[in-house]
Length: 308
Ligand SMILES: [Zn+2]
Image 1: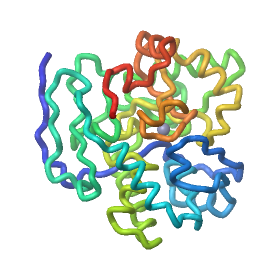
Image 2: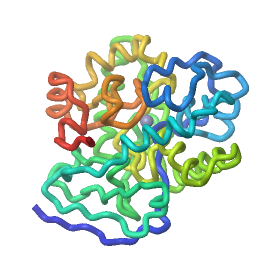
Image 3: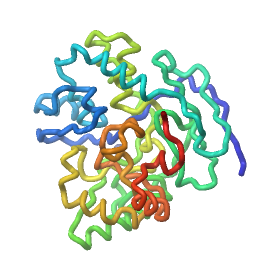
Image 4: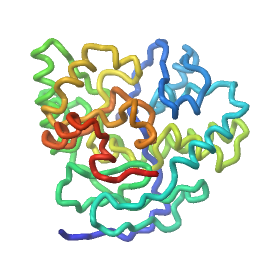
C-alpha cells in the first residue's frame, strides 16, 4: 500500500462541523438532548423560537449548537472536564500508515492536535475524519447530486451519490421520502461557522481557549467533518426527535443494505465525541455497514481506533 502524505503545514486550515449546514427555517419544536456531551453544553433542553431564528440566520450546523443559555455558571468547568477526556492522543492510527501531525495547527492553543487523515487508504470508503483526523489542505471532492433526477439536490462524493439515490428511490417505494438536508459542505464555510461559534463564546466572556474548546465540543474542529469529505448526508431533519419518525425507522432497518451507517449513535458518544445525531448517515459500503449494524460497533470501533 502506498503511503503518501502531504506534509503541508496547515496554518490556515480550519473548520468543519458536526452536522448540516441547512439554511432552512427551523421549527420551534423542542429538542431533547439526551447525550452526555450535550448535557455538558447546556442545562436547557428547549430550543426557543428566538434561538431557532438565530440558528437559521447564522446557518449554524446543528440546532443544539445554539441551545446554550444563561445557565452557564459552571459551563466552562464542565466543558473543560469533557475536553480533558476527549482530547487524549490516539494510540493507534486508523491504518498502518504513520501518523503525521499538523505543525503549527491553528487551534493548538486549545489543546487540539489532529493528525492527517489517511486519504491514501486502499478502501476510500473507510476514510476516517473526526476530531483527531483532519483532511489535508486542498482535499478535493468530486461531487454529484444525491438525487440523480434532481441536479439541484444536495451533493455528495460522486462515488457515494448513486448509493444515496438508490436508497432514496427504494424508500420512496415504501412511502418514505429521505429528503437530503445537508450533504457536501466546503471547508471554507465550516471555517466561518466554527470561528463564529468561537467568537460567540468570547463575546459571552470566555477566554479564547475556553471558547474554542466549547465550540469544538459542539462543532467538530476544522477539516474534520465528513460533510467536508462528501461522505455523509443529514437526512430529513436536524432534530433528535427525528429518531421517532418513520423515516428514521426505515433508515435503521434498511440503510445498511445501501451502505450507510448511523454515524453518531446515542450510546457511542464517549467514543465519537459527537452528540447523538439520528439524522447523520455516513456511507461506508454495504459490507462494512452490515457488519457494523450486526456488531453494534460505531465506525471508530470498527476501525479499531478508539480514544481512551
Ligand atoms: Zn451531519
